[in-house]
Length: 309
Image (tube, rainbow, N blue to C red):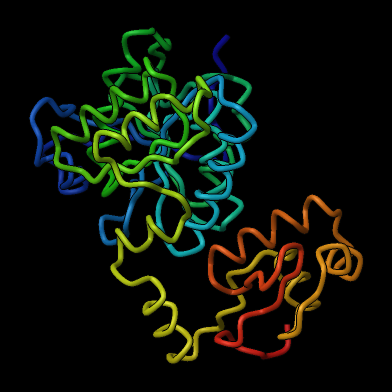
């Protein structure tokens, strides 16, 4: 059942609470581990960190949202922390990796064990890209059920903000939220469809006052203030604005001008499937790079650079 992790030649080390390397964020709260076993790196305390949690048996909607939110946040330098479980955890790690960011997994077993074993490729990639695998449990400790709710306090404590992507009414993710509330963290939830059992937990959190994460920019603004102003400062400093886009997004932006084009034409000229092109356009619209002047038609915002892609 267990899969021993020795990827990327990473050595397991133990960091005690009194050691300088022990995360300062954990020292602010009671009931934190006396030490952490770590493979790879700890989160950079100078960078913003978002904990992404949600259902193991997530829907396709939850999967899409976890991937897109994590990818966009990672592109903006936000570290993503989760628990390497099935479902939202795994997709959050994958999205962060796709966005070129660093991601960290806090396990409910020894850090030398990948659980579930199906996520071993993610486990390896986390280490190869400068992230880390963390656990308060000794090497070789099996993934016992009662370990997972307890480890959630570490996930929330290491984060600046907790984002619940998809959760049922009675969900383990809500345990993380309880810890986060005790720790004074910001809580955001991705809204879901009314009547959808997978979204009852998120919708309930929003009804109780959690932030509505209707796009990644909302989370970025909570973390950094005005995200659009920050993007503008980056452009003025000479940083290439376009480097943060994926190849698919760049393909769409190459096609788009300031005149309207139909989705079908954008799909054809960018050589992307219609569904892929629609998804890319939605994400670019959320960023303010593209807008939709009329249903089914898109054009590139005049506010953004017109440099060659």
